Image (tube, rainbow, N blue to C red; front, side, top):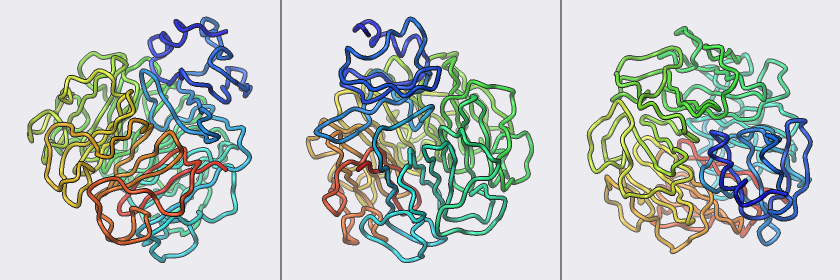
Length: 444
């Protein structure tokens, strides 16, 4: 039986990962067994190191599987994630160019539509830039949308309006992240891979040439547990709690290595911290440490770093507010979002179109609360000009620009406060946002 000390110590004994005080459905141990869990008392004794670092646990809330977190959020790290639900679907909505909605059309949708392919075992989705990625329960990674830079990883440079398999024959992908025109992924052996545009070395293979199929991120590390692909740079966290960056660094030092020099292979984020648990990349960078503090570095325009300034920083600075209970952050081109352990959502940066969700369109250089009075947010995602989040009751909400229906509430009207995604659907468990489109996983 797990004790409260086990739960409290989980994030300190494993540099990434989430643990729940609520009942979890399953966990996966080092023998790759999916084990049912009814209550917190059924969670494993951590002294045996039976849990793979980076595991995300799902909880049952009113019959809805949702993501929850305590202490630290491992982002979209789905290492060894399994689900007992028979059906896990991906939906998309918004701007369709290049087939980024994955519904085999190029027609705009202002409410959710199913991604094509007939698959019902999706485990995760990442939709940024103009393409999207997903992982199925068999460990195979898929991609759709813009492919002209090889970012789909299918060994072509052709757009696809429905999912195509990422090449390489790997059946052990556990996390994927789509960037501006490149993609990243982690396999269960702890290796990190990149593909797509590589002008700035953003796929981390120590070259400047683009790749249309996965290549290994250099460094020889086999303990990557989370990666985040930005506009033209990349970030990653290893199980030793160190954070790394590679790619473009001329936008104010978004690699966080105290320089503004571009790097084509991973360099350590400065500060000497060994307790990073989640990072998020766009044109700037965000990260959360296990002590619950949030940090930012890179381009500071519009206040997107959240440090009360609009000045670029080439090494991490604290997001202001004095909060020590951040559990997840998400970076977009001009704004940032975060969730605290009390279930509140916060935003900072450019406020145009209401993307901060504070019922205004004004820029903010420090975190402001997303309105609505909700205290059960469990994950948020930033699009280029809009925002989206999932609550623990399994509902999805969105706010900001809606020119192409990217808010998914059935209209083209922008909103400066959260509105529910159309359809009255519940069971949503993860959201992701790209350039004027949104994607989400729903379990039924």
